[in-house]
Length: 242
Ligand SMILES: Nc1ncnc2c1ncn2[C@@H]1O[C@H](COP(=O)(O)OP(=O)(O)O)[C@@H](O)[C@H]1O
Ligand SMILES: Nc1ccn([C@H]2C[C@H](O)[C@@H](COP(=O)(O)OP(=O)(O)O)O2)c(=O)n1
Image (cartoon, rainbow, N blue to C red; front, side, top):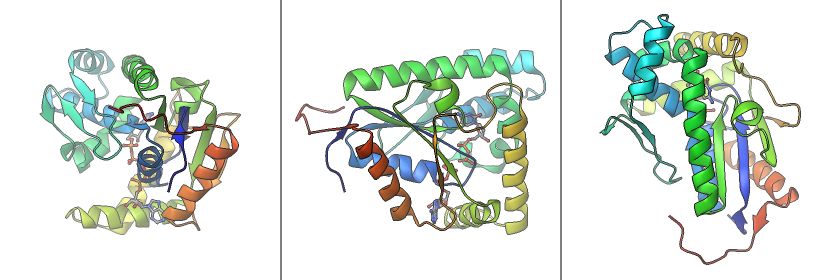
């Protein structure tokens, strides 16, 4: 694909199963940029909370665990890694226990403050090092990177998203029940959209992209056009990229 290097931050927000991770990763890889999966960081903190035997509803203790947790999120688009206290937890954070608890943990304001600060440091480092980063999550355009020169809010019907997620879980060898997957998608949509702090919503200046009837290459093409139209592509600099 690609035709230049990304300059600046592309913020991709939206609910579960809209294709954020898939397209963010491909976009970053094609444009010589870094990629940040912010949901993975909330999932890693959630795993730490569960491992500590702390009830996610106990916000003080959950915050203590979050403060002590050594979460390291890699930003390589080809292999985005998540470590918790030195252990690779990339697979475990996608499991049902974490998925069930992550909305509650990520609704705790003090937890969000810690994680957002870390995300902003990662973004600043990426801009220094390679000049561009694609960041995906729920509050990137509204809170984490409000000055991003391109914000896209990706949507799709809940049924389409549940079908995609079920297919993905089946491919990873997990037991799949489409009804349960749809219920989980709807439960997290409701929880993430209604929380008091940084609820899931489109930034006022975001472009809304409905992917219900688009395949992945179609979504990617739409994003590339937006990046190009915003003037965020530079000619390859030839500098060494980390
Ligand atoms: N437009 C699309 N068409 C078909 N499948 C898609 C589309 N977008 C995403 N998928 C698939 O849906 C699943 C969830 O996508 P993912 O990128 O993880 O979504 P998100 O990060 O928004 O939760 C993946 O298996 C992905 O390949
Ligand atoms: N920037 C973000 C990213 C994720 N979250 C929360 C809300 C989500 O339900 C969980 C998990 O996010 P993740 O992107 O991994 O979830 P899905 O891949 O869409 O299932 O984290 C958040 O509150 N803010």
